[in-house]
Image (cartoon, rainbow, N blue to C red; front, side, top):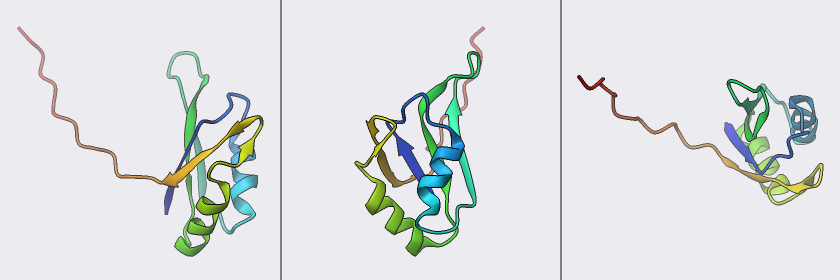
Length: 90
């Protein structure tokens, strides 16, 4: 299951997230989204957990729980919405 994690402190690392979610089961991957130019965290990321039951437990336990001074927003990630193709104007 792909899990959205929001309201992250800018000091949270991918290792911090992996450690928090590992308490509930196997973590396949962790990705904190960063600004393309500055490299600074955008304050959210994604955690992939292969076992849905473990992922549900992690979501329930970690949603609104504090991590490095901020309460996390944790829920199941929704698929990325399709955006219309942008065509250049001439």
